[in-house]
Length: 329
Image 1: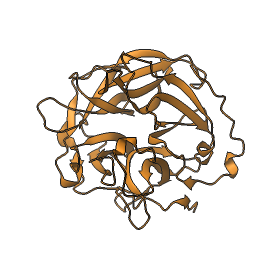
Image 2 (image 1 turned 180 degrees about the vertical axis):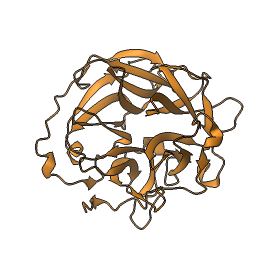
Image 3 (image 1 turned 90 degrees about the vertical axis):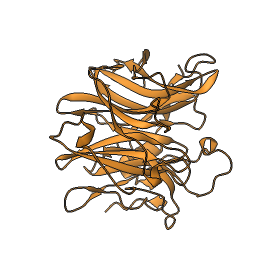
Image 4 (image 1 turned 120 degrees about the vertical axis):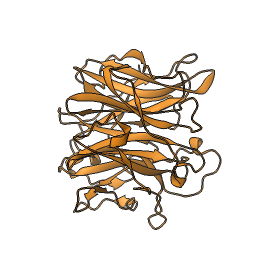
């Protein structure tokens, strides 16, 4: 295991957020733990490793060093593309959910879980718990975990045999980090025009619980400038395992901004910053047109910006903010 000692980011309090926050880091997740640190994981352009950085402030993540906690093997299982890691703390341990292909089939993508009981995940010895036992042995990725009414859930994207899409979103309560306590349910299938450009995709889910509701955002369409965010909404008192409890936004809630020159925003997450503000975490490019396969264009950069709310308490993500210093007002 390669290791880099992370700095304390003692000067982070003097830093201001400048977007992009971290360059060439896609599918970013920022997790604020009760130890006072912000932890960040993301896909790297090489798709070959899992790395964690931490800082005392969001701005500090921009200069924090990374610790590589796991590297894909040279061949065989999990030797393919490594995508979209997320770091979570529960049951007295850290867990990393991540997607991995195989050496002989890089797109044989399945979701795996690593765990360590070390208080500091940058210094822990990580153990592979295995693959998440999803309903079908099919393409699946982008697992995220959240707690609602004392129950820990997993939400992920998967290709379901018999449905002519690339991926749909599924939800289930966890029994263990890799198994479910109930039969998973399908929450959404990409059917709307903005969800099926290039590919028929619902993926990259994230959950925000505010104002008596659960807001479940997700990303749709191909990962070029058409990539955008949709949102499902459910009452916090509803049975969230009933797909009928969720309503889908008719239009994207966050999309490319030609006026700000920010393209393909998506695979978002949520975090509360050191000032107590709800923040949107996402990746996007600084240009519209891509040469070649978007998968191999490395310039999906991690960005953050405050979330605003409408009068009735619904998140209003607005436009992706301009490149440069974030307005701190």
